[in-house]
Length: 201
Image (cartoon, rainbow, N blue to C red; front, top):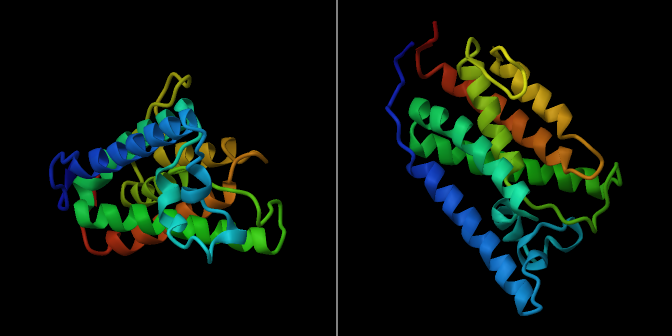
C-alpha cells in the first residue's frame, strides 16, 4: 500500500469518541439507579429540539444497551483508525460530527413530514457518524477489501458499507440517520480525494 496522505496510526480521536460514549453510557446506567432518565435530556426528539438544541450533538454519545454501544465502537475503531491515518485528526472530527449532525437533520426532516417515523421518536447512537466515516473511507480507498464475519473471503469495503446500511435499516432503527451520515461521508470523501493521493494495491 502506498498513499501520499498516510499519517500513521493515531488512535487519539477514536479513543476520545469512545471514552465519551462509554462515560455517557455509564452515566445513563447510574441515572437509572436513582430513577433519573438521562436519555430525554441527551437524546434527540424532533418535537422538542428547539427546547433542547444541544441534543443534535449529545445524542451521538448516547446508547441504549451494551450491544448497541459495542457494535458502534467496534465499527468506529475499524473505520476510524484507517480514516484518521489518511486524513488526520481534524478532518476525522469534521467528518464524524458533520455526518452525525446531518444524519440527525435528515431524521428530523423525515419525522416532521411524518414519513416512517414520528416527531416524538427519540433517536440515540453514534451510527450516523460512524456511517459517515465508512462512506468517506469507501471513496478514499475504493480498492480496499475487508473481512466481514461470517463471509470467509474479503469483500470490497463499499459492499460491506452498503450491505451494513441495508441490514441495519429495520423499522426500529433510525435508518434516516444512517443515510444522512453515509451521504455526508461520501461527499466528504469526494472532496478530500482531490487533496490527497491514495493508491491501494
